[in-house]
View 1 (cartoon, rainbow, N blue to C red):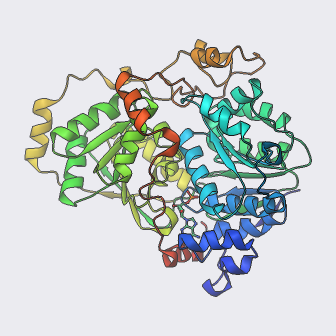
View 2 (cartoon, protein in one colour; view 1 turned 60 degrees about the vertical axis):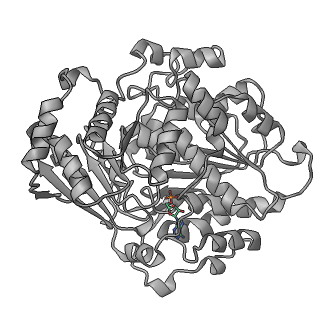
View 3 (cartoon, rainbow, N blue to C red; view 1 turned 30 degrees about the horizontal axis):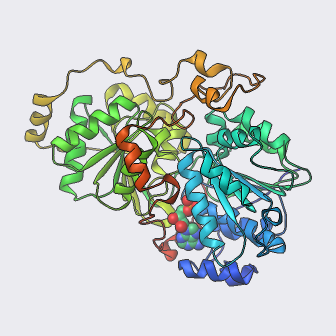
Length: 503
Ligand code: AMP
């Protein structure tokens, strides 16, 4: 049976501090070192339950502090096994955290390291698209906490690099995304390898029927926690939509960025080709911009992301898949250059701003043909989005039309989700492109076809260019500088957000 704890009209004084939650002193010290003293609402609810060994299903939208909400209780429980032995055998994998994307895996691994820094617990992250050998080595050294994307974890399982027989805690992070990306067969295969009984924590921005089914199948009497209404958007994000012709959108982005001095804006485009082209056009208009999408190498994507995090770019143009799970501190604004065709993607997109209680703005530019998507979004988030009017200088509009690249009709671009590997390449594994299967050796073909077409962005093997090889040699993907992830957040705002009603 599932019970539900509801969020919280709790006055500020009633929220326990981290010191009052009863965390192991080594963890408490590490949390205080980050500057956080007050748990966010999801942390206040999930941490004590998970510390007590309870299964939890958390519906927490991105940016609510959910990573610490599962990382802290895991580390707390694992302290019973902490030891300083050098022997790998004394450090078996005891907690497995599965995430949909490499970038998210990397971020979660950072949190585990940060909060576990004063303990002898070991952690490792494995994800696809990079050389498997250093990961093998790290696994051989032993780690109590393993953070992984499902496909690469199965690679390691097949190569017998990892033993999961001691896993007592499983976390499914951004479970909705993992289902969207067709990972269900991989998840099922992994879960079958894990012992029972175990503790399972499932986090998802939204609770779809499929997520509930997953919870019913693999969790044991989970307690449901919902800190914001399902499919709700953060209270701290102002939303506005401007109607305009498709041709005026580029000028609108330039105008918004320049006239308001915006920095670190994420602009969403629906297509890979659209992101690259828009970034190039923005550069021509004097906006420092880069794009990230599935046709870029891992090294190039990481480079663009790091430049963005370091404040060297004004705009990062991204597709939904590329931006998934990114936690970039302080993004003040996201712009929907194209409206997403799936309303849930809108919730994820605007979750890039207003994170952890900071204020943010989500601006949507929509052509008449896109109004239907706006109506779908409003239905999903159960509120209307203000329609504004944007005066764009004629000079900017004229500049764009005089240099536009020849247009190839939008329909031929193909959305990122449906482009890439052909459906026949994907259908047999439920997740992988053909080349990815080749990388791992033949995977038993008992997988069924994914519910949605898969994007090969996170699954296809990384094929480095000479330039990106050189860049990767200088800055390995797993040890990137984290310019702003440690930025302290305004706790008062966090609590302000917590006091609001969910719906
Ligand atoms: P997440 O939802 O886990 O991606 O976290 C969003 C952001 O909130 C991250 O940058 C965290 O470092 C930050 N954060 C997590 N917990 C707290 C806290 N208790 N107080 C302030 N900021 C936090």
